[in-house]
Image (cartoon, rainbow, N blue to C red; front, side):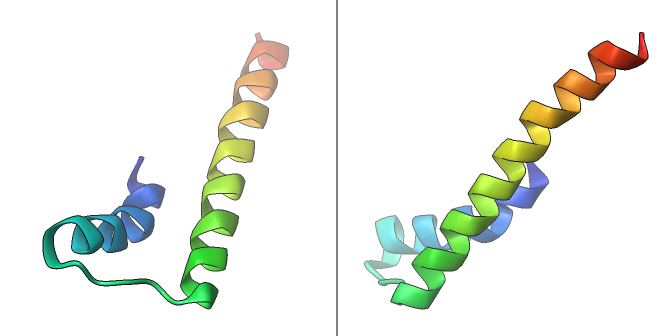
Length: 51
């Protein structure tokens, strides 16, 4: 969950301060979330194989 903090910070600034992210920021946030999701999915598979 800690890996999502860089994505949550601009989200909260949007909600609280009405700030906007740049296109590069949105792309970076998307890449970060995809990588975290992939790690979660593959991490569960490797844990099952190690048992």
